[in-house]
Image 1 (cartoon, helix red, strand yellow):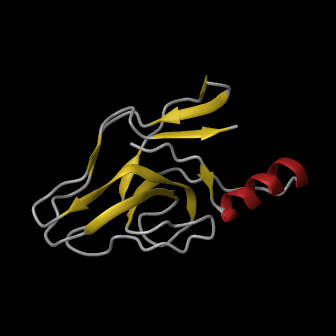
Image 2 (cartoon, one colour):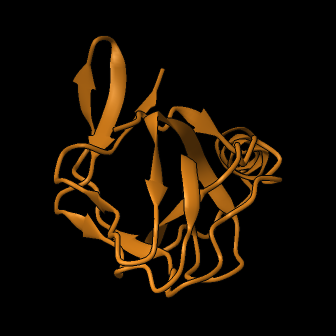
Length: 135
């Protein structure tokens, strides 16, 4: 599974404004894992899966730890998407977002190998297999 090390433009601006300019940043109480058929990019322009029973899933992360000189968090529990009721196509990227629908992209990254999700398939991420690194 991927390491989502790319921070979105939105989150970069929020962090910089908060840390260096004293501008308040409303931290989301819940974050969601989204699946993409193309790179969402820092500008949040990718193609998110949108059919066949797809819905973003809540993800809970561990407390940060230092690994290889980077601050790292990982998912605490398995993330399980619904069984696809139609073909979702090839999943190439994942992103962490601040809302169940709409909202803002926070982090994104590429899967180590793309996964084709056909009708009847289910996408899962085992506990500890989704990481976010900051350096």
